[in-house]
Every structure is written in C-alpha cells, then in structure tokens.
Amino acid sequence: MAMTVRLPEELDAQLEEIARTRHISKHAVIIEAATRFANSETKTQRVLSIAEEVAERYAVALTRLEDA
Image (tube, rainbow, N blue to C red; front, side, top):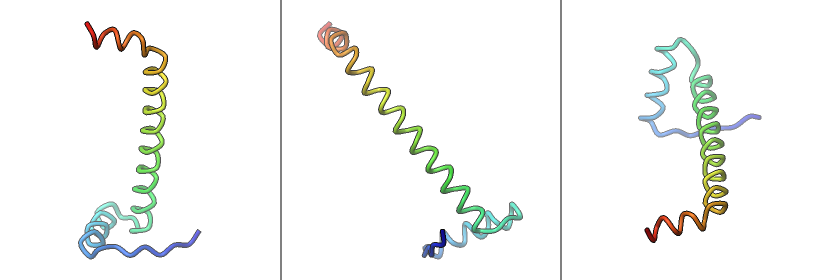
C-alpha cells in the first residue's frame, strides 16, 4: 500500500544517516522500524491481557496480600 509520510527534518536526517550507514534505503529503515513497533505493541497488549486475567483469577488472594 502506498503512503506518503512527512517527517520533521531532524528525523529525516537521522533516518538518512541510518540508511547510509547500513547501506539500505530509508524506506527499508522505516519498514523495519514500523515492524518493530507493531511487534512491540502486540507483545504489550498480550502482556496486559495476561496480567488482567491473572489479576481477575487471583483477586481474592491479591486482596488478602494487600491487607496483610
């Protein structure tokens, strides 16, 4: 899917430097960064979901620990 991204000049310069250092295009740098971000967000959502399930499952025990 095509998309236009307008970047602040400083960020664009940083991406240009990263691309030049790694011998890849800025497009490739942005794709890699977006992929890492999406994966990180997905993991964060899974962790929060598991934490919520644990809190619900052990609510009574957690309340007892708070009162101890």
